[in-house]
Amino acid sequence: MKRLLVAGVAMRGDGYPNAVNTVRLLRRNGQWDVRDHADWLPDETRLWQLVRGRLLPRLSLMLRLGAGGFVQAVGLCATFKRGDVAYLPYPAPLTLWWLSMIPARWRPYCMADAYVSLWDSMFRDRGNGNSKGVLSRVVRFFEGRALRAADLVLVDTEANKRQMISDFSLSPGQVRSLPLAIDEQLFLGPPVAARTGALRVLFVGTLVPLHGVEVVLAASDKLASIEGIEILLVGDGQQGGLVEDFISKGAPANFRWVREWRSMSSIAREIEAADICLGVFGGAGKASRVLPFKLYYALAAGKAVVTQADYALPADRPPLPAIFLTSAGNDDAAEELVRVIMALAADADARSTLGAEARIYFERQLSAEVIEREWRDILDRVGE
Image (cartoon, rainbow, N blue to C red; front, side, top):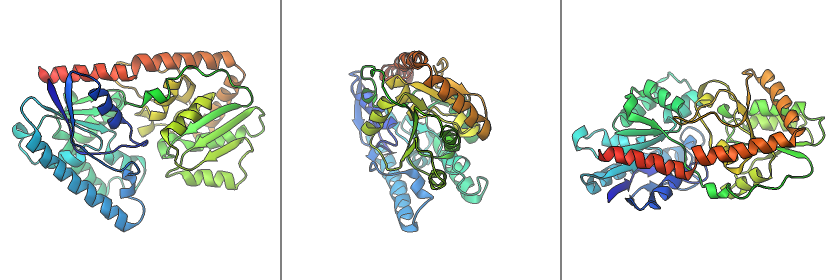
């Protein structure tokens, strides 16, 4: 039986569900002896805390991550035996950096969960300082060297695969895209009976630029006078100030913002109660290279999805069953979103059909069963 060693400093919690759920899936498969030695960080840990907030907590987290990666690298080298495979959850570069100091032929065979790039998220996506400045170049060098030490780098979409190869000079055969793992049982209940009352439009997000919350706010403003439609925004983050300004200037009565952090079970209940789930509207860049967790949730729950037309998928997946916005500009996109919402509000059959297609798509293309097949293929190839 092949030993699969889980190692490294690892993120978990509702904000980073992929690795925990991946390990759970691997453990339930009797073909692999899964041994979890990872240093799982507290659920409330967020990597953006490294660049925002008070200096002392930031330094403390930085030391925790750096020292934890070193200890995990040493422990993995001491535990690893010939024929083993190591899985390093996100953020794998924290441990891979130390492993990169070891000559390749003596390193453990490592599969790194890169998910999305640390450098991309910290600098190019969130705009924390100059993306070409000294700190940015240091982080990019750090992540590139670390990832090049991995035998296989796992990412979430083909677009992110191409970006990783370009940003960090990885070889194409070194990177593979596969679906993210979620706790799908929270969302795969029986279809909910048609709701009565106002049509509920749900937007869940961390309010970073890729989500395009300004498009949702502009559309909400245009829908202020439309009876029978309510818009619920759940989440907070870097662009929370945009929502604050929107509310302070007199948000429409049919708009509600739930700002506090919600548990995954609570998010699942909100999705269950929604008629339409909104995706991302951030335009080009990172927004076009991801398939965010909230779309996994909405698809699994069998909901009508509206998102931007420029999006990405894992390898060999057909297009999403969704309604896509083709406009790139904020004003045009908001107008288009209003038209789509009003059309779906008037057509319950269309919403029902979209929802049924969404559930089927998730089960066939993104589910735990599919992910297990992907891992079986990966580990079989390692054996060869």
